[in-house]
Image 1 (tube, helix red, strand yellow):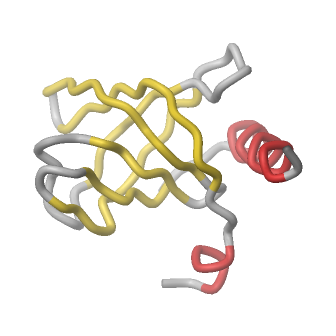
Image 2 (tube, rainbow, N blue to C red):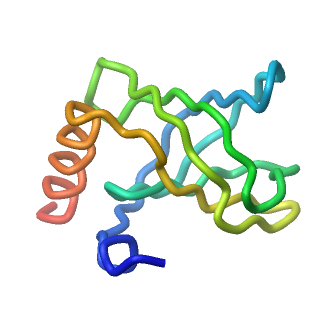
Image 3 (cartoon, rainbow, N blue to C red):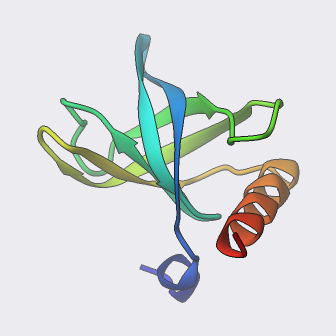
Length: 105
């Protein structure tokens, strides 16, 4: 795990998330986020190493973030820790702004 991933501040928050593994669509909730990853609550998380696409909106934002991620760890029936793989500069900036603002509240 890189130093950036270990040091990225995780911010508790809750929102709906949709994700696709192959052609299968799943819906759930996320409960924390950082610029490097997200925690997704799901009863049947995929195995670590699984890559998938996801879409979610940050609290207080209107534009959806669409990103690919990889499962770093999973626990049945709790959820999974996901590392972002292909985050655009705009999405990175939105998450960074959100996490910085949330930490000062």
